[in-house]
Length: 48
Image (tube, rainbow, N blue to C red; front, side, top):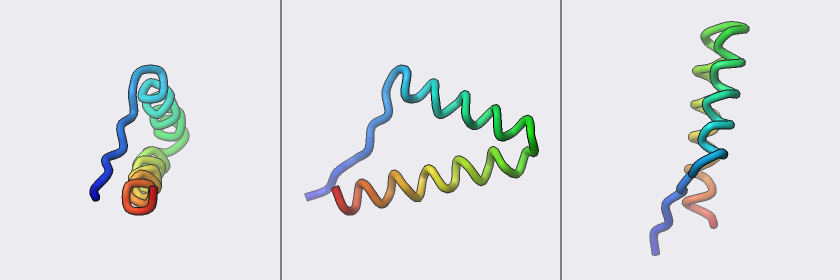
């Protein structure tokens, strides 16, 4: 069975807020944050 991670509403806004916060410190940090978050989501989908 395959699962898909869904981020909704205020959680999605929190992710964007965190991305922009890291990005203002250093653009690479925002990118790294999003890449790490994607790895976490992929792990949750693979091993719910």
